[in-house]
Length: 130
Image 1: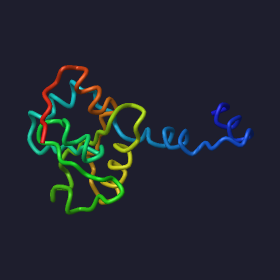
Image 2: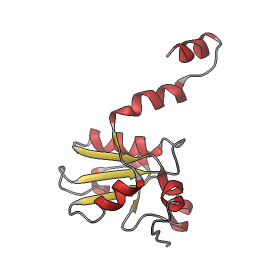
Image 3: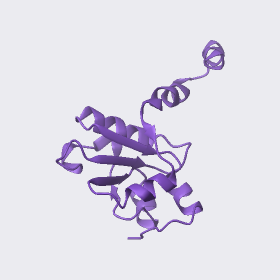
Image 4: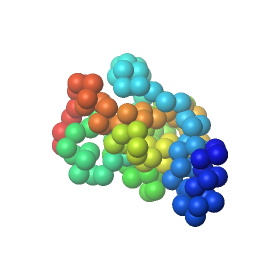
């Protein structure tokens, strides 16, 4: 926190750092945990990357969404379903934005996979190309 105060005092924008700090409210899943959850029922995965990145490879059964445009129509009707959001990697915050939007829409079991598609590929997991 002292680091953020120092940045602020120096006139450096701290919004990106604060976003990271406030996004700790979502339970994080590892690549292996997500792979395991894909075999469970009532689990939905959302890719928050660009459409081009999505088409070049995404998790099996993942649906592409734009976090800033996420609506209830993009999500399952069951508000108790497990929702998993991911983006590019640990430096990307798009999955946090998608998860926040889902919570605002009333979903209760919302998770993020910070490793993103890069971590998924690095782990040698199955990807789907469109």
